[in-house]
Amino acid sequence: MPRVALPEGVSVNCSVDDFLWPWNDSTPVLMMHGFARNALFWNRWVPAIAETHRIYRPDLLGCGLSDQPPAGYRYTPETIGAQILAVLDTLGLPRVHWVGESSGGLIGLLLAAAYPDRFASLVLCNTPSRIPDRIKRIYALDRADASEAMRVHGVGEWCRQTLGYRLDLERADTALQDWVVREMDRTPASVAAAMHECFEGVDTVGILPAIHAPVLLLSGDKSQISSAQIQVFADTLPSGKVEMFAGYGHGVNLLQPERCAHAALEFWKSAP
Image (cartoon, rainbow, N blue to C red; front, side, top):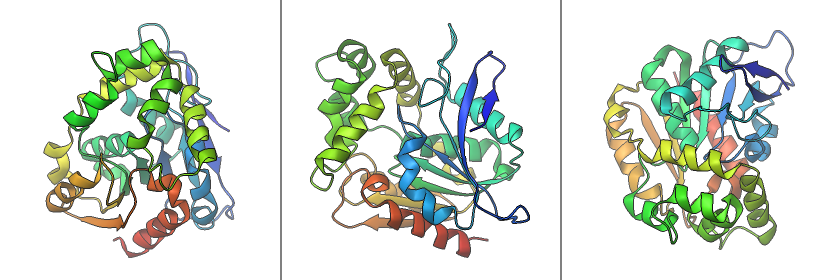
């Protein structure tokens, strides 16, 4: 698995799934995990997509197998974007299909607006245009905000208490729920809190008209975070397409991974 060095003296880990002949020139796929998660959350998507595309799955600093951020490092849309651009440049990826889940979708929107030539398309799964105020209050638990709650309770306990807003618990079995909590608990509380503070202030509505790459939006129609905002995307993006998962809440990337992967493949076939 390649390590991508950053100017700060730390490195980002990137899983690469390449099962193609060397001369295959299909557009590569970059898959960006959501908040406090890691590249493993894409595992069930890989078999279908890797039949025709090389896949690159980076872990953001502080997540998965990447280094912890150095002292004084600030998570901002710009510093997170710099991590991704370093991955693209180091691995020789001039243009990719972006697949982002939740905040990973927000990162994709911000980068596609700033660097349109580098994105052939975007697939946004469970992605809101912004974190709704009601969810911010719920995520705060008994504290002033979600970041303080994570520092006090730890990421695992915070995740357990708020899991129903990121994963449809009626459709997720106990093993999947426990795995999600364990994996998110691998992210240090200081990192998760700092990342959440970064994403709390992001609102992508203003940049949507500037994103001309084709965009596929995947969401459960009962998601308390993303489903209500899907129509905003559909009405504002110049080239947006919606696929709703009837009867599903948040987390269709984990609950219906094969269906999501095949939806992405069909979308890429039809995209310009």
